[in-house]
Every structure is written in C-alpha cells, then in structure tokens.
Amino acid sequence: MDENGRRVFQFFNEIGIINQLAGAIFAARLPDGLHVSHFALLNHLVRLGDEKTPLALASAFQVPKTTMTHTLAVLEKRAAIRLTPHPSDGRSKIVFLTEAGRKLHDDAIASMADPIRQITADLGDGTISDLIPQLEKIRAYLDQNRSI
Amino acid sequence: MDENGRRVFQFFNEIGIINQLAGAIFAARLPDGLHVSHFALLNHLVRLGDEKTPLALASAFQVPKTTMTHTLAVLEKRAAIRLTPHPSDGRSKIVFLTEAGRKLHDDAIASMADPIRQITADLGDGTISDLIPQLEKIRAYLDQNRSI
DNA sequence: ATTACTTAGTTCGATATCGTATTAATTACT
DNA sequence: AGTAATTAATACGATATCGAACTAAGTAAT
Image (cartoon, rainbow over all chains, first blue to last red):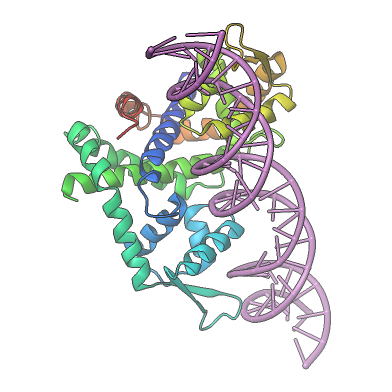
C-alpha cells in the first residue's frame, strides 16, 4: 500500500473510532431499550419517508435482509411501525411509521439534545460543519460503488 | 435543537453511514472468519504496541470488559495473541501479539489493498486526506470527553 | 490484622447481526 | 399454459455485543 493508500486507510480508521465514541455517547441516552440500529431506522423513515419495503430498507442500510427482518420485528412489537401486505406484490410488505413511532423518534432526538449541545458548544465553530459537504461526497461515492 | 445542533447531528449521521458502507466493503474481504472487531484489535496492537491489559484495550475501544474478554478469547483460540499473567497484579493479564497474529494482520491488510487502491484512485486527490487532521481533532475531543 | 471498598476479569443470560437454507410469489422463456 | 429462474421474506443456527452478577486480588482505613 502506498502513501495515498495509507492515508485512505487512516481516514476510515478515524471514521470508525469517531463512530464508536459517538455511538457510545448516544446509546447511553436513548430511551428504554432502544438500540442505535432501531433509532437509525426510525430516523431514516422520518427523514426520507416511510412506505418502504423491508428489502429497500435493508439495501439502504447495507445490512442483510435477515437483520432487517429482526429490526422491523422489534419495532413492530413496540408498535413504532406497522407492516402491511404490499398492494401489488404478494411476496412483499410495506413499512409504515405509526404515531407512536414518531413520538419515539422525537423522544430519542430529545434524549440526545444535551450531548449534541455540549459538542456543538465545544466544536461547533465550523470544525464539524465544514466537513459535511466532503463527507457527503465520500458517502455518495461509497453508496454508488458498493461492489468495490 | 438549533441549526448548529442539526449540523452536528448530520455530521454523525454521515459518519455512521460511511462507517457502515466501508465496513461492509472491508468485511467482505477479510480472511476466513476474521471479524472487523478482530481486525481492529490486531491493528491496534500492531500500530500502538502490544503488552496491554484487557481492561486497557476495552477502554481504548470503548467497549464493555465482557466484549473484550470475548474478542480476546477468539483471537487467542486462533493463536493470534497470547495472554500471560500480569507480573505485578494477580488480577490482571497482559496481551501479546504472536507471530501468527502479525501474519494474520498482514494478510488482512493485503486483503483490503484492492478496494483501498480503487478508492484511492477515485477519491485520493485530497478529498479524503484533507479531512484527516480535522477528524483527528474531533476524535481526540470525543476521546477526552467520554462522559458527555 | 481486620474490615470495607475498589478493581480486573469471567460467567451467564439476553439481544443484535449475519450466513445458509427454505417458502411463497413473481417473472421469463418457450 | 407450463416450467425454470428470480425475488421477498422468513426460519434457524452461529457469532458478536452487552448488562448484571460473581470471584479473586488489590487497596484503604482503622
């Protein structure tokens, strides 16, 4: 691996550590037994709209279908989502957010407000937000090149 | 949450997605049944030196002690590490990398060379490496403010 | 020295993630 | 229409992660 390769490797290493540290901070605040993966799914449905199929969600999160089946089962058990038969494809289903699901998402967001505020106060001068456009570009690239 | 807060939140969201996508790419290449967490531990020992206690490693990775016990047991079973009694503290142990462990790390690195090369070729013009200093700063901040 | 407290690691049970195989429905091909 | 191939979701078993409780060893206070 050459010099550029090492830098790329280091980049992903830093990303991984930040993700681990931030995940630990947020996981400790989430309501009840809400797991980060549950919140991530709720957040996806709130931000990008519900009425998706389980397979589409598995693909969006780059996780196996079986993992999504499990995550959806948990959230359905909590009544945060509803699963209905797909209107035109008998094999498939549609995922709907419920009111309880939206409230759970709101509660989760609220639970993270304190650490977000603290981090914003300490690093919010642009240290973080300046990076977002670049990260979006990298994320889009990886998203479009999954077969690498 | 104000505008700055939303940006910070979005930042961690992008970090999480990139981590997920990159993790999927690398996990698919790792040797045998080597899990990302196993590789991460080997990489830590190679880069920052071995002869650490299990607790120190758990703290470094921000995972519960029980998780580290399990990860170390797996790597010991593969003879990638050795665990010896701590010389001055009867409760503790010391983790040593073995030659097999170094080789396993080398193999893992080699297995990731192809995707790294591809990513470097596509994004290696500074898009990635320019971000590293900022990410290091953020990582160091989170590392020093775990109790947030 | 004795007792109380703390610390390092493990055991155990529960949940999350994942790979393989299976079932049911759809699509493609003839 | 009938068969083969594909696709969506699930069942099942294995590993990873985690929290609570436990054991053994060290530390502190008197």
